[in-house]
Length: 283
Ligand SMILES: Nc1nc(=O)c2c([nH]1)NC[C@@H]1CN(c3ccc(C(=O)N[C@@H](CCC(=O)O)C(=O)O)cc3)CN21
Ligand SMILES: O=c1ccn([C@H]2C[C@H](O)[C@@H](COP(=O)(O)O)O2)c(=O)[nH]1
Image 1 (cartoon, rainbow, N blue to C red):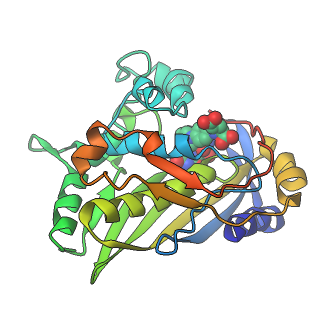
Image 2 (tube, protein in one colour; image 1 turned 30 degrees about the vertical axis):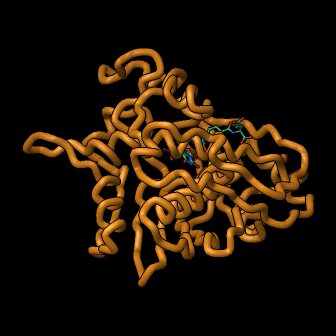
């Protein structure tokens, strides 16, 4: 929690105002932030200085694992975060590749599970990683990347957290995740949970101990309409200790994640938090 608050404070102290053309808003911005999550100690990085909706964050990542490309599928598993980008973004609404209501196009999980090969067919990046790690293999390229510039024009948004790179040292699994752009008041609340969750669940289904998850962020920003709430409300609050994430031990494979798992298979123990804060969201 401390590292999250330190990053927020750093943006306020050192940030530079940058105009963002896509949203038409100014963002107070810093470059380069490194966060670490101790999955080995079960220190779940849930923000405590406001109520944080971890189930929606886990649902969103479960949708990526399943390769969803429809905001309706995300809604059905408990996550509304893609509604606006799929249905309220003018550039995407006018895009000939958009297949209709709720379509997100070739983003995130579509790239992770069905990356199109130029000579035909698809690559399932996640399946390969799970298969290798389950056999104790780390080929130093255990990477799932959502970042496919050749298909940016076929999706509603470029991926923000775009690459996940696993490492196996003995029987301990590590994850390094890369993010190019981070809405710290809203997006990072979810992204911290997701990086933690991804390492914890991959360790569980491949039969390893979880180690540390490293989260590397390039552009970290606060939108102009979020600044007051962050500076004068959230940063004035005292954080509570980290809660723990309890995962249903019956989840044993990628197929389990693809079929029967729901957000109720993930429980948080000992979550103390301050009142919710409704930060404005920019499309
Ligand atoms: N401007 C922007 N910021 C983001 O963080 C973001 C995007 N766009 N577009 C793609 C996804 C969607 N994400 C989102 C979208 C909405 C919330 C949000 O509204 N969160 C609220 C309530 C969540 C709930 O009730 O489930 C929150 O208070 O955290 C969070 C992340 C993260 N990403
Ligand atoms: O997982 C996510 C997804 C998105 N964001 C934020 C970061 C930016 O504020 C916007 C995306 O805008 P770009 O113009 O494409 O950078 O969404 C996030 O923080 N986390």
